[in-house]
Image (cartoon, rainbow, N blue to C red; front, side, top):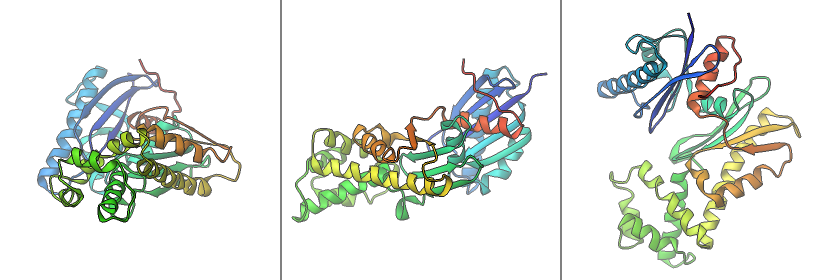
Length: 312
């Protein structure tokens, strides 16, 4: 009988499951809602339902029994920590070996097609993660919006609001960010804007959606907005540099991939790539595969298989 392998990306916004056969062919996939919290009975129930729905969808598309799918190996990458999820997942997933790891690990595996290298992730938050040719892993950043998340969408929006407040108080440069963000938040002035972003109606994830507005204003040539994006790019490049120093020798060739919505800004991405590639031994490129496929590659590796993914 054929053996099947499971990879899951459990994120803050959605969950994706991918099933592959013993030849590296993707046989099925499924998606469901977020699964980053399990504290409390209601959250735990929602977590188990999301995971079950996701895997059931993938199993049905793979031609497996959706009610009782069995796997040779399963690897699940979870955002928001793994300790509180591992026991639940090992009860839910039927496999000879169930691996529960963090989302950075599977993102790196997918980006590098299972090989060594580095990633910088910049969405609502930010983090860098890498693996050396010898298998040593290191992370930088990812400490949350209070103490970290430099260069993230939330941080870009926060810095834009600070620029608006400086202009409002008379000691900052004039910027087109002011009318743009007032319109985006339906605020009358900078003071109301700032207070509005402290309310429950504007959680961190919603504040982060203001980052594309900053990019639009930068594209129009506003120097304040351009400086904000260049600064974010520099912070993200510094995270990558911290990873590289710890994992690779000087002038040793290495690969880096960028991941996340922040890199949709051409201004930021161009600056980021220039900073990364100042050292000629680093090659930067988009990720080879999505994180869920990275989890599948790790499931193969755990079973002693080193396969190339065949997407049909």
